[in-house]
Amino acid sequence: MSPPVFLLPPGSLGDAVTGTHVEVSGDEGKHGIRSLRLRLHESVELVDGEGRRVRGSVHEIEPAAFSVSIETVVDEDPLLPSLTVVQALAKGDRGESAVEMLTECGVDRIVPWSAERSISVWKADRRERGLRRWRSVAKAASKQARLARLPQVTELHSTSEVIDLFGGDTQVLVLHEEAHDRLAATAILEAKTLLLIVGPEGGLSGEEVSRFVEAGAHAVRLGDSVLRTSTAGVVAAAIVATRSGRWS
Image 1 (cartoon, one colour):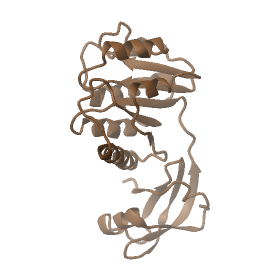
Image 2 (tube, rainbow, N blue to C red; image 1 turned 180 degrees about the vertical axis):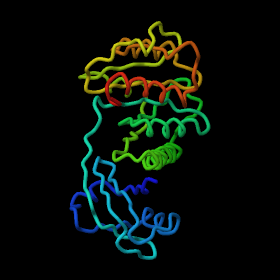
Image 3 (cartoon, rainbow, N blue to C red; image 1 turned 30 degrees about the vertical axis):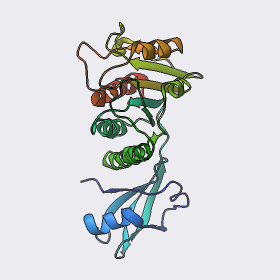
């Protein structure tokens, strides 16, 4: 059985050295003590969300915290090319489901997008709640997937702001059910960044497709069936990750 993974704040493992100790407190410390009921000398892994992974064993236990005796420290390089998914807001918990699966798939950045046909709308305080929820889901999913790197969940983007992400050494692929080309047969260029755009339940509007294509995006479809917005992105990300070498 694999040891449990605890996600610590960025930079908190910067001074980690084999043979020393690091304390795990806060929510992660409470989770380890109260929920997982960690025991002395039990193996654990600590990650900082930025690529550093520490393996060790429980050295000391307190009521709401524990310390770990460090055995190994590994810095994991980011996968290349970088993979960004622009995910349209979806009704209910489908957006959160998309974030969970995209995180498990190992994407580097998730961009919430207020599409023309998005049923869900984030305004004022709802925007902050939505972002907090998406980021919380990403953290939980990264631990479940045992990732050392936490995907960035950006601020909510408009269509114009999504287009601003184009350019440079970036290949942009927009999922569209009426596209002629299939993603599985589309050439994956040797770009530094791959950017996938996933529309909402009602699909992309004609104007959105036109604006994206005019800005340099390539419209593609997954197959003959139409997937939900919560699953289309992760299927596309898996195809791209395989064909680009991220999963090789």
